[in-house]
Length: 125
Length: 110
Image 1 (cartoon, chains in turn brown, green):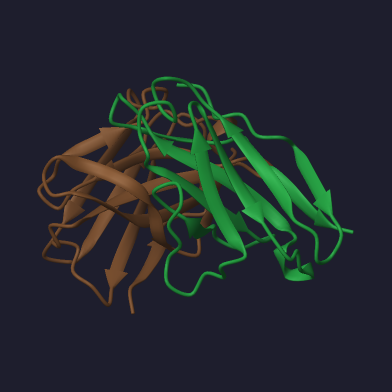
Image 2 (cartoon, one colour; image 1 turned 180 degrees about the vertical axis):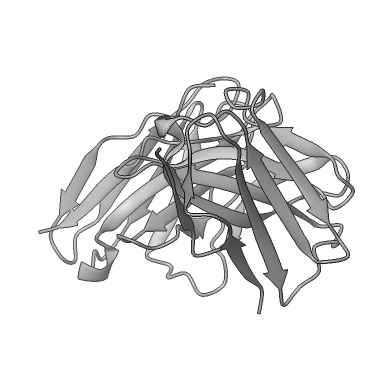
């Protein structure tokens, strides 16, 4: 049974970099069929897709966040990571990691079928 | 990219059917059948209910069904139950190789 678990600081200061890691267990992050992504949800608001990565390192980002976001993968540890730079209070949200299916190499296509429980990151001094 | 448009709230009595709409553009819903629907209970992670417009993941009740016409997708919940009270989000793959979520709909069981 696939499980995803987010980890990282719950409090980040304004202008600093938010860093989170998603550990995948019960399945290989190197599967050709799946892509791995991040989504966030500010308190009381809707979902926002942040970006997605393939095990090979190919990345896909939300254009509105692309200048500040970086997603990387470590296949040896079966995990992937998110960095958001120059954070402000608007980046305060529950951050979820998740898996979605796609076309091998060509890119993600389908919705997220497995999700982590989410982790709240607050941006405050 | 702009969020897909959903009604803020929809309500119904137990046993009734309700439909949630999701309106996009010719760059997302209008061109691809990679439409998904998620259910989210308070404090919980979203749960995939429908993918590829009409398909249900294993374990999802057949009371949930999806459809699409042009730039609008819909989720129908039939035989409404108290446990269906939650927030629902649509999502679509886009022509820019990105994903976009809907604005979200709160479903209330009266």
